[in-house]
Length: 191
Image 1 (cartoon, rainbow, N blue to C red):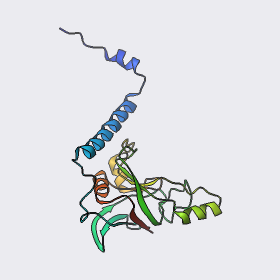
Image 2: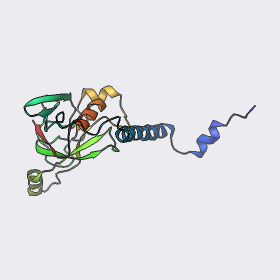
Image 3: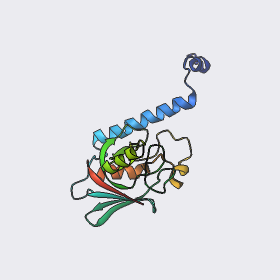
Image 4: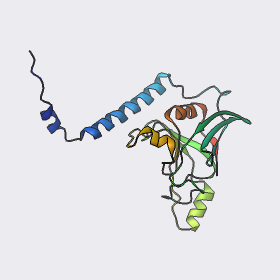
């Protein structure tokens, strides 16, 4: 009969707390799954040109992200916004989601959230206002899925505004946004 390894001895050699280790494993697994799905072709990077959105509209008051092809909405998703959603983003740390015209300019499948697509905030107008008022406008505003390491129940993320200024959708919805938009797809964020 083989001896049973001592769990206590293993735990003492690994100073990482069990909850933190589990979060690191979960994050590594999610990154690997997203990367694997993308590279294996199981999750297409792009839909055909006829199926892709030619613009995105975010309606903050309705908490909606809409993908358009011409004048037709091809997909609509519920979203969460920054912790202080009223009004346009003016400066770093105000927890507001920007309002204005931007582009989707960078994709990241290895972020702290399940997929993220960067919005080109700040634009020239945002930068000018912030400079004139002595503030940093902030940056790294994204459309993204849920956190890879959730510290609250999933219902928390779907029932309230919780981001630092980003636009959050469900993980399934961010996959669709990812597949149906291109580099430099215009995005209009309305009040």
